[in-house]
Amino acid sequence: MLRSILYFAVVLAFTGVVFGQSITGSAHDFSDSTWNSSGEICVICHAPHVQDYTNPPEPLWNHQVTTATFTLYSSSTLNATVSQPDGYSKLCLSCHDGTVAIDNFGGNTAGTEHVSGDALIGTDLSNDHPVSFTYDATLATADGGLFDPANTNSGLGGTIDEDMLFGGKLQCASCHNPHDDTVAKFLVKSNATSALCLTCHNK
Image (cartoon, rainbow, N blue to C red):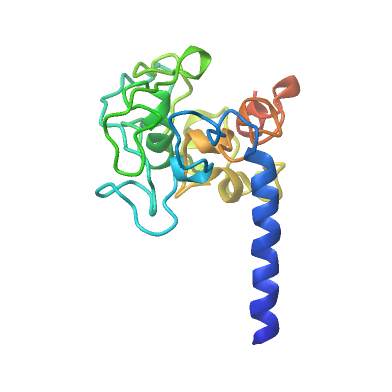
């Protein structure tokens, strides 16, 4: 029993080191920002013990969540049912939609620092890849140009379903890992020769 606990602790410690190295110095490292008096990296998004907002989409979330209504992607060839962003996508948009300040964390709702430039997605998602939709075998069959996520290798160690979907849904975090900027633009893997796109799209 003790050996199992020690092994688990070592694994967690190693994971923490890897995690820290990947986000440190990235665009998501606000530890030296003048508005972040804590000097911490993780606290902008995550509360280690008690969250300061009511009913966030994820546990121990420490950043004010957007309440914006988004203009969604729409196309006559889109077979997925797209609704307002939820889950991880909503959390990403809680900075990147520009309606919530980056420094609105730890209970603060009066921040003044907002994303800008390429990081600003805005509330019009009509020209962005759709998110927060169910991606399964039914969709793949109906679309005809998608791989079945349940039995298609993601290139990340398992299937698309296992490695890239959240509760069976495609979210911002399906393609972007906010904790790891090893690949440009926080991509979960390289998109050289459209490799990331072609993970799901059978084109």
